[in-house]
Length: 141
Image 1 (cartoon, helix red, strand yellow):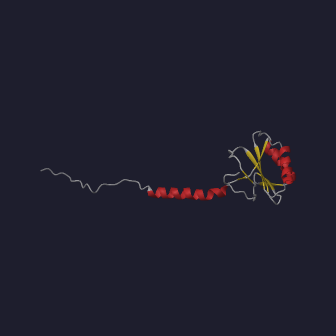
Image 2 (cartoon, rainbow, N blue to C red):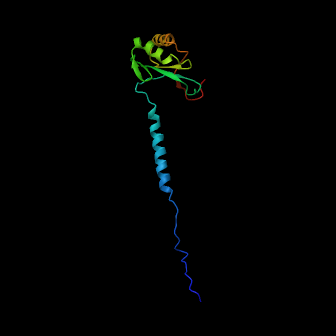
Image 3 (cartoon, rainbow, N blue to C red):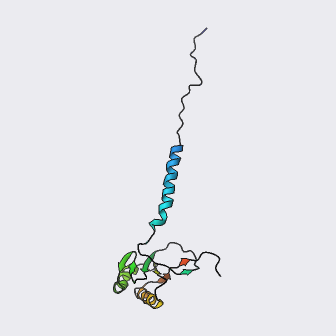
């Protein structure tokens, strides 16, 4: 009889990677991003926009002008006075013929005041002006 080494079939070395911890960490990261993402796009200036049925717009090259109920103005989150508005906007629109001016005016502001801001935007050379509104939920009329 020959001497053969016997292998113990039950003592195999397992080289599997345990993916459960990787999946758990990935889910925690995804959930964390989902929770904080709505706060990343919040403006520091509070504006209550009027409601309207609107079409979804794609992200375009835009300049946001914020007009708050207490009369504060901001261009791209930078606070400006009414007198500075035209000069700041001229810098934003010079050399950018495709930029859109997006006016976010609080719904409580008298229309005449909003009209004065729109006139300044036009004088600054904005090729197009959009007025931001809140999307109406429901079927509408």
